[in-house]
Length: 367
Image 1 (cartoon, helix red, strand yellow):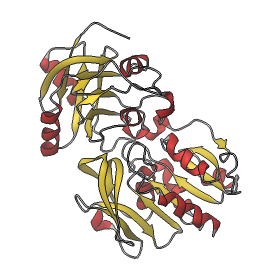
Image 2 (cartoon, helix red, strand yellow; image 1 turned 90 degrees about the vertical axis):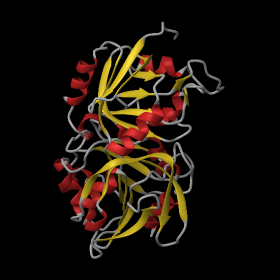
Image 3 (cartoon, helix red, strand yellow; image 1 turned 45 degrees about the horizontal axis):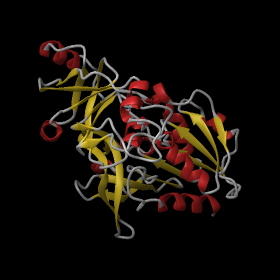
Image 4 (tube, rainbow, N blue to C red; image 1 turned 180 degrees about the horizontal axis):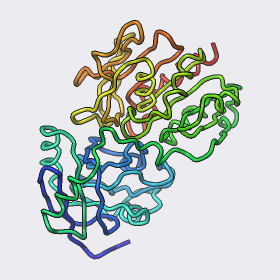
């Protein structure tokens, strides 16, 4: 869809202001501004449910040049609040593409801005920390824009999972020809399609449960193991999940958690979770496996993390660390048949270095 060039603005709550050109749907949108360093995979990033409530800035300058394809969605629709780009390509070249990124964003009513000096904004966020911002093609007054950014709720203390978790439980069979007879109860806190596919491709029958589901409802299905998914926002206000997660962790059956699921598992063991100054978002984060000594290049997307000093040896052991900042990237639990990681081993977009974690989970179920 070609549209007439229209001016747009982005303002951060600290008064930083830039102008550019509208991308996607005309309007005004707000959220926490963050950035992702991946060179490819913009569609998977925009549809990742963990990005609910956030304005996504891509550090790679050329975005849109391979269009969009329905097979690359990680959710039923884009989950970002808005997009911030340096150089937008309305034309595209990709035999698998269904439509341009412009048409895709417009159809889903996602407002974005291009022509922005993303390098300057990224450097600013790295020094000042993530903060709220506004993108608008309707408001041009700087004071009004900045005021609108300031009035948004902070991501710290913000519960977002209830906005996107499924309404009803759903059963999905293993991929044809792979069925291993094992049943995995999956807690949907904003699960990506790729995570579901990784488990189904390894022969598991899944039942996906809404985040508010009680342990008794899950137990009625008689699963062989439990999987706790990724999701958006701060895990600490998610009190409606605590009883269920505590019972899952004390049950004895295998448990695997990723991202938000990892954080909820840590909280259940008395380990603190904290808001990060900037966060990790990209497909090139080096993580060391403390058992093997091997380094994995990982895909990450998180603004909260397990507090290193609160990990107590009698409750959990750090299994993986981030080599950029020594933050906790994985835990094994002393009082549970469980392990969890902060990063994304489903690897879309990104390397496949960490896919062994799904195999490790399947081996636990079969043992």
